[in-house]
Image 1 (cartoon, helix red, strand yellow):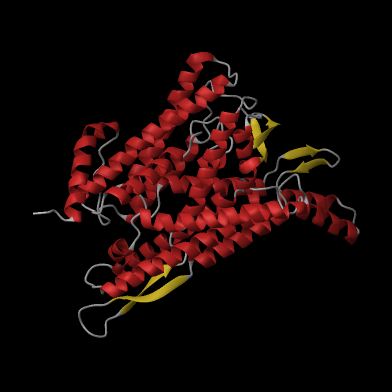
Image 2 (cartoon, rainbow, N blue to C red):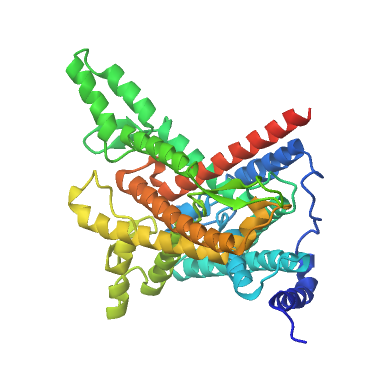
Length: 483
């Protein structure tokens, strides 16, 4: 008798588990807990200790024998997505975890059509192994590129750097495993929390920075716009014209963060929260008795901020690979067609032509209004790619009608076949419109200039914080009801 598709999928999951089972010793064996097995306060403590306190502390531990600020940074364009400053133990950040989970979800959507416990365990173990492999490969590429560009210290210091960075990557993998097994707050991961926390920390540090910088032709200036506007207005002559001029200067200054960046960030926060609260309501579930039909909401941002993160990750990887392949300078016709780079000092470089120039965000529109055509090309590229990535992610991450019924509709309900097809159409529409909206918000934040010039990361942080707030509200309401 021919086996069904679900039986074949379970057989593939069992075969994958048998193949990967010897590799289970690479990490601690943490048994998956039920939601009621760990109290919510315990989940909050685990999240605060593992995901925030430990990871943020490691993000400020400097590397022993690491590269100096004057040495080339082989991961310069990927740095904003790594959620960690350069020269620390957490320099690689969440890149291994995010990359491994994207690959595993795509493979699971292509190879498996079953959600059995064996299949889920196999995918989790495969993601953990891929995270270790990605961590090691990024280290090898980075160290080899640094040594090839004239890095000093020899093989001994390179080995020390590899060990420290690999240990930091292992900590990220284990912290993410803590959330997956039910010991952390439901609905968030260690990687998303680290990205959100670092984005918020960078935004707050830019806004309230008390550091004084000396600018050419302007004298010493506070980096933070809050201190800058207070100092400028207080030091200006008592005339209202001088006070207004000082306020206007801090509002529109170009070389340092200004108040317009802060207002742009606030507008982006409001728009992101408003879009995340928008729902598409359809009649989807009903009980076997008459008159019990219910409406189940589907979020407009069905895939959240994942499309812009995938887009930014792909663009950063493309820039890093092209920068290494071209050596930072010119090359053949194909290399120049893909992009040309100009040295910016300190090991950094920025694109000045080719495909790389148009896929990366242009300069701020307020600085040079003549870049409007470049902004339009970049905006079309970002919005189109986010729309396509959102639709692909909704399908590849098993977010179709079947999983929607499992996660949202719940047990004890039945759904007609016609309704199931309608769910697929609505989910595809929500994913497309949500990707379009997220891409537009990211373009807006990058063009006008958000605090810290981190549009995608701040957008991701807003959605993560909102999901956390919704989880805390639901748990507190449930606790109050039972008490």
